[in-house]
Length: 350
Image (tube, rainbow, N blue to C red; front, top):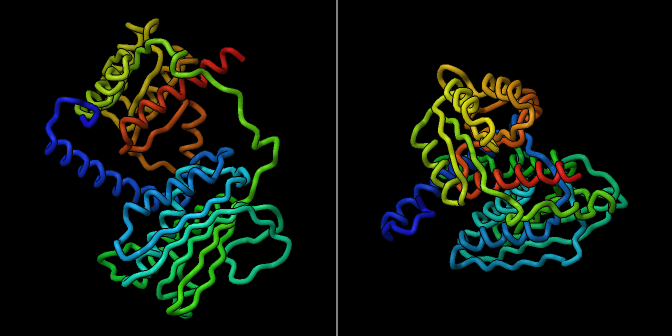
């Protein structure tokens, strides 16, 4: 609805507020799943500089008037292998924690530079190793961390703040994400003077860091017909509306059986399927299997709020092209559809 041009200003503001609330809820679920390691996003070679800068912009919006933000990102940062949104989350979590430590006034500084580790460091959390890293540091001039809390700051649900205001997951998630990326965290703090938290992320080799071949551009895409499968009519209709808003055609099914019927009728026309997992009569996984029997090459995107174990997710990903965790933005849906089609086209030309 936010993509429409004919809604009034108050409705737009209400929808934006609802979207932010959904985003916060989704973010909490993602943090819980990331910490429990039940969901492991794909890692890819990325340039960390823009991610740090994007996180700094997010923090700038949350900054109290009495806290100054300084950002210094080196222009020659090495490439890292990472899940981009998780790197942003690490910086945002550390930044928010730093802001909370400066209740009266202070300065928040975010730094990113290359670093070579050739010997042991002090105050390290995680497995430290020699080599080349990208160092991301978040520095505050706040109250510091009491010595009795220093050994517990990365434990889940540990917080020195009121429980009603804090879930205690921020630093635990940081530690979990950094470990999953093969990195480690270093903490240096002085009470009443401030804290420095350094995140070390290993660099990738030159061959892996090289830019992949350019895939098809949006101009290369033809008009698509997308089969949308969801047992919630409002969700299915909203997804279809946004897909059509971007110039494509849609068909809508309310469950797996109806999806198979529509696919049989329009097999020659359907270019891609977007479907939920939990549906009546026939669930998404059964439907995927039968779609693959009918057409092994049909691109399939799963859009679901189901919480899958790591093994179940791996089995599912072997049978589909992409997975979207609900709730997601409509832009993410369109971007994912286009990305899947682009990859298929690039593979066909190879």
